[in-house]
Length: 231
Image (cartoon, rainbow, N blue to C red; front, side, top):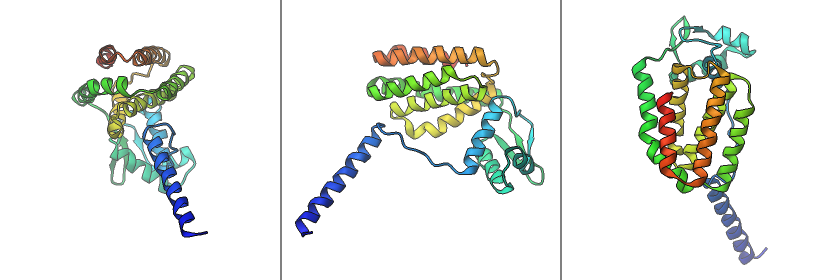
């Protein structure tokens, strides 16, 4: 291969990479995220907490987790460390971990955090939402509507809101906001009555999606503001 052909090939290859990266940045291709066993385990325990199967004040040890989920002590220990880092448990030497409670002041701070970003999120959604985003949100909404387990309702709501923040270009805050939502759900136990909660959530996010399609920023802000105040 002559040097000129090689240069052309390299230039074309780099151009393809550049295009692919920009497509990903525009959220046109979903990126598969590889999670470790402790990460997946900690997420499962969070679902157990928010569905009421685990409760605030309950003690969790490496042994009980290992036996319940059929894993070794090492990933159980790492999962507990992740849960402590996220604020769900407190680890005590020689005693294991205890699921945290959330006080009223902290609960109010969580809601305030979302409200403070609501205007920016609403503006970003109506400005940047694409047909692809609409199709993704419709799929998430359909999944939310068809699920029957408390933890599934909760996870679909989280996925929907995560997508909203990504669309609004606030995805750099998604990790923090999702953590706050998880703790808020734990505090409010809003999914204790699954049927009421699912119907309420589906109706809210279906209306939100319709408003987002119409690109009405003020209506979107008002709907989300009222929803957050109720929770």
